[in-house]
Length: 123
Image (cartoon, rainbow, N blue to C red; front, side):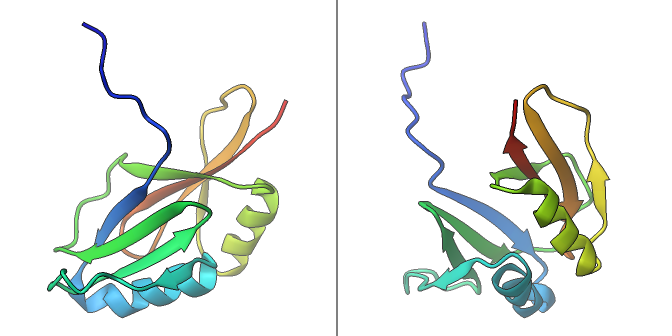
């Protein structure tokens, strides 16, 4: 049987940081990544912050530090080279990834161990 789920778009991405790094994470995603912070529903009683860009939300919650893994979120950008320069100017180490035809991409880790990928589609 084929999967009955019909996907439309990414709604949100949830990442976690140790509680003592929550405000540092808020500043990183607001200032370095340039995301707009949005109101977080009052139904949530644990600490966290929400952000929005385009029609996607980023939710930052708290949990103990996790080991580094291949888990990541990929964000399509309009100028991957400029994004990489910006991150490196802000002392974020970036990593080349295996080439995928039509995609220029790289990865990096935020200060909390979350692996992120930025990519741009090019022919």
